[in-house]
Image 1: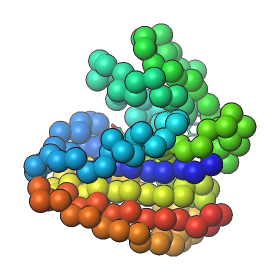
Image 2 (image 1 turned 135 degrees about the vertical axis):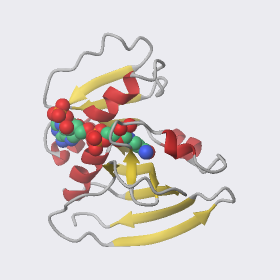
Image 3 (image 1 turned 30 degrees about the vertical axis):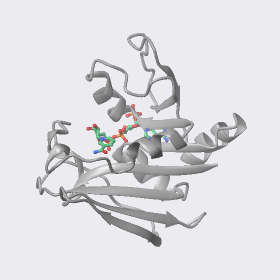
Length: 176
Ligand SMILES: NC(=O)c1ccc[n+]([C@@H]2O[C@H](COP(=O)([O-])OP(=O)(O)OC[C@H]3O[C@@H](n4cnc5c(N)ncnc54)[C@H](OP(=O)(O)O)[C@@H]3O)[C@@H](O)[C@H]2O)c1
């Protein structure tokens, strides 16, 4: 099973402002940068509870009928989600991956800063696609944070878009 990250950040590395707003992601010209193709390639979305809380404020469930797993160590209420396929898991990233593998999922989209950091630290991420939006916001919720050891990345590609997006794709070796 493969686990990927696909996210947008400010050039100074933030996924969201401190109040969770995401307005800055729309800086520059918005143009397709591969999200749809990526999304079509995954069969399960694994998000952290804090990302889930933000998604609930969107009003509309953005994941369609794709299986979504929300990670939390506390009970969650999914009653407001009418047309989604959602469940909760918790535990070490390796345990979560074992459960997903047992259910035959092939490609997970892992999302949320703390969540990504935990999966990276456990050596569970295979591919990372980070799109930098041309803005500095100074403070916010970081994509990256402390890790227990260095993680070597293999650079696969960097794509630039005329509106100012810069997207880098990396492969990670297993069990780092
Ligand atoms: N720019 C982008 O592309 C992008 C993408 C994704 C998210 N975001 C933004 O990032 C912000 C959220 O990121 P975040 O770093 O604050 O948090 P997050 O990763 O979304 O959520 C963290 C929470 O997830 C739970 N969790 C994570 N791993 C777990 C595990 N293995 N087992 C059990 N629970 C686990 C814990 O919940 P409990 O505390 O409930 O136990 C933890 O506090 C939001 O504002 C969101 O909108 C932006």
